[in-house]
Image (cartoon, rainbow, N blue to C red; front, side, top):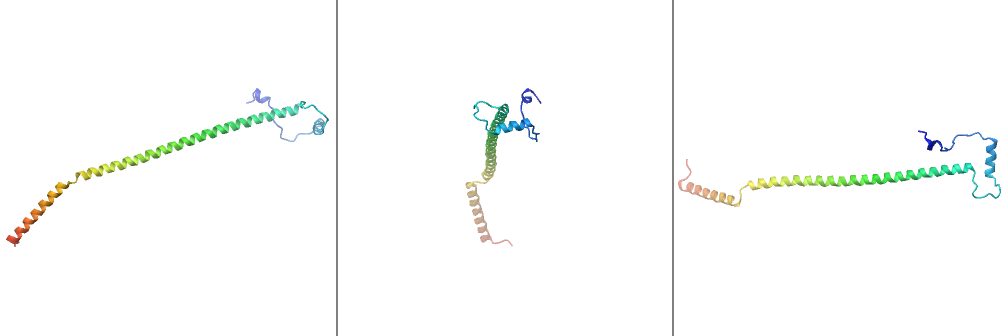
Amino acid sequence: MADAATSARVEPNIGPTPVSAMASQELRAAVEPAGPAPASSETPGSRSALDQLSRIEDKAARIEEKYARSETLLQRVGSTVEAATNRMNEVASQADIVALRSEVRAMAAQVRQLPGKTALVAVAVVTSLLTAAIVLLIIRYGLPR
């Protein structure tokens, strides 16, 4: 995993470090005003810190870009799922409509099999005539004993 790009990288030291006399003099010189110093003169330590800060900012920018891309991707996936759900609801309602349509067709077929008006009127006329004839026969000849 250690390639040329990562081996040249300077990582921050987090643990306690022994303070040498030279390091304490450097710290004292950095804190105390040394007088007028040119604005462009930087110490090698501050330059490496600026490089490290620059790398951290670049990494943070890349992470933010990745986060924005994944957020966009998740939004697209969400809208796709929502559209598919809407389509499935429409298909389900169409299936309900098809089932209702088939039930109505079956009921219409049963109604078509029933006798029509003319058949009902004919049966009523024949029934009334037969009833009248039977009543007349009973009145004229009486009930058979």
